[in-house]
Image 1 (tube, rainbow, N blue to C red):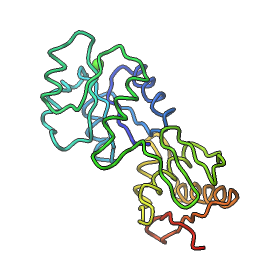
Image 2 (image 1 turned 180 degrees about the horizontal axis):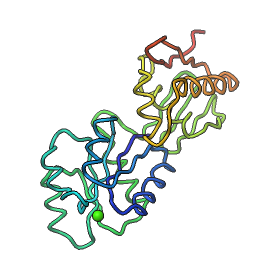
Image 3 (image 1 turned 90 degrees about the horizontal axis):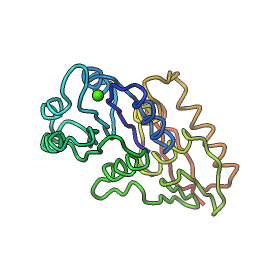
Image 4 (image 1 turned 45 degrees about the horizontal axis):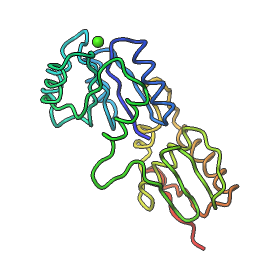
Length: 224
Ligand code: CA
């Protein structure tokens, strides 16, 4: 699960990409211009960027070059035969490129590879007490029995398990769980935590989601 910004001025394609990545468990925002991309990057923390190069307010390669080092991993989308574009894009700081047209599965796979940072396997199974979370299928098991979670509940348990024993701030949770288009009410995160807590309890998970008042939440193994 990751928060991805899609910068693509073809609205239909942007929507297709966002829907595909959302189905994979990611949280996706789409913007249609480089200016809007800058605004989005100021407003939230993204784990990855999908960037078209021909945009109405400028060239994606120039934009990349000016922000070198200040961006999350970038996957560039280029026209099919534009070898020059690809080389320029990679030189400017893109981490990978994908020629159009592409298969959604390939985009998802390349993005997964980009999001894998050294020392942190994004696709490794996470375990806490008798709870097992598999990021590849966003599936949760308690004592080897599958637990039905909504996409958002699964994203939350992943986020908390990745930092089990540490406090995850509420703002970080909001950032990871909601796009700009989704109105986040003040108690939205609390509501998801409560639902998840109830499901974990009912399934007999020896995991507690501890509230640190005014700060955030922490997952830890329940004391025997
Ligand atoms: Ca374009």
